[in-house]
Length: 355
Image 1 (cartoon, rainbow, N blue to C red):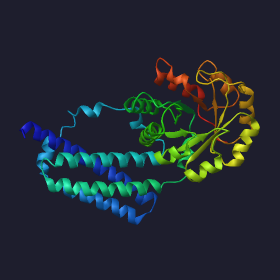
Image 2 (cartoon, rainbow, N blue to C red; image 1 turned 120 degrees about the vertical axis):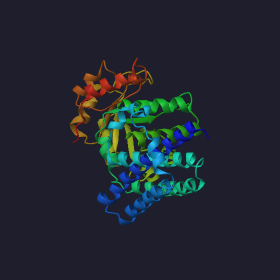
Image 3 (cartoon, rainbow, N blue to C red; image 1 turned 90 degrees about the vertical axis):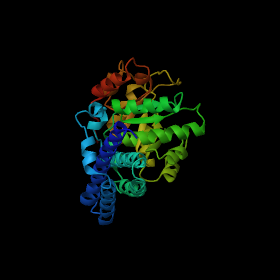
């Protein structure tokens, strides 16, 4: 290994060890001060010390000499979500992901210098997977409900041409400010839908967004999505709940005030209200228009998303009816600048009113 390569390797190990220890400490503080969980706090502290001791096998003077924070090009590369966390769950999820990734980096590059170091870090990585999952599961069960209540923009997407394009699109939408994404693609195979759902669910956790699967509670369960959205002719809310459990979100399409009332009685977490206007993705025999939205706004306390042909040209009719949450497709997908369209939609929707 050349001197330049060796220095670069130590620089990577130094940066990754700092990230791993910071991530572990972030999780440990929640387990200690919020959960008052002695066992979980002790395990995270133990992992943190194991990582520190393993990295301590490397010469500290060499690590410090390789450190070059002012010259690190990565310090100037940021994304919008780095400065935003929508919930405690997103803080913990980000810390867990950052820790696992950093430990893997230490393990792989460490193999070129010290095999024992790599082995110790590998064990710490697997311990981290276990405790991080337990910590996330211990978070308040209503966290999804709080995030849903704070959501105003819900975007429907298809499976895309391939996984890479889909991942890039999903991440970009969350980073631009979309609160909820739903995968709806009746032409995709079950395997493709499951794969895309798993990818989107992971990105949603990383970005602090919500991810919903259309119609298929089985795929929502298998991919660990945040929930499922069903129509009037699809799986009943109660059956979807039996599949997904009490902590996941169940959305229901409604086309009349009676259906909206039934959704409340059936235990839906939110409703879609429409179709409000003629859209580009579906055609219907009847459109409910703003009158239905006014009825829902006056009576229904569940989060209600207006859907159907909504864009910036008619959004004022929706908000004028008292609804400040919308579900859209073309208004974002077909925009010259989707991120700008998202920003303008959210600006005009304002902050949702929680009843």
